[in-house]
Length: 348
Length: 80
Image (cartoon, rainbow over all chains, first blue to last red):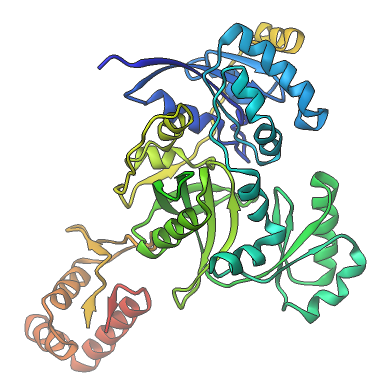
């Protein structure tokens, strides 16, 4: 079968110690048996490693941060699209999703397809409103509270016992054992990601995660559960293993079916010793460990691209449990002229 | 007692729980005991078989076997 030629643009090329999902997503697409893809990397910073991985990415462009405004970002995408004729664009950062979701019609007018959650889906799964999400969809979640000021810290003990989790709106989470630690982590997170801060009840158990893809009509196109085997000091998985956990898959199917989730997602859950499952976070995109799903038999990046193109995708229910991923670091050697080109022209 | 359905034991003694991702290693005697549990033998049956097969005093065998079965239970490799 002749492969279909398409051009895919993706962000999240920061394959660093806190990696974005762009590079693993692209690896999945590169292994597609159906697509012969030209890959366009969209980078915010000029040292995102993916830019220099020429075996994976055909051409990279710098794009402005979403904080510059959606008009500025769209103008840049329009410029890139005139050259590259992008078929599908896959954003991979939580912080940029809102802008891309709001701009999906304008992107469509340019001929660029996306496959993103709806604004309602995106908003209702925020960490700050997770208790309401749990209530609405009958999913167990830990108690949580949003705080805006240090003055609210002393009263936290009236609601939750220490330790507590201190989380940023988009990124970062720390376990705090004392009010002083809550204050310290609150300042650390807010200086980076702003307010509010989410205080979450600490549930004792093992963290388990699921990477999944919903078709927007309530069908789970694919889902692979994983347990982190080795965690970095940033709390990121450096190694993980696929699990044979039917309860986790049932919860995933329930969430996708009830919310009619559209696009990639990562569920972060705690499994207690009593085999109860608590949902602690929903990330509204494929995670950085998505290549494990490809290795275990479900090419979710390829399926996401097909959904974006409006193609029918049959649900994948099988995967190989006991499949491991182990990350590694690798030094790319680049000539200064490449860095120069990207820095001066914004493209490489 | 029986082996948890999600447990796989290789010939080399690598024990893998596919529901949790936990893995363990056991020595040849451990493989033999797990094999006996798989064959629906009770703890008393296993004690009897081992005492006939190996030169070991009853107190040592009882304590060692009970410790090992306890470890298998706490690792959820076997369940009642």
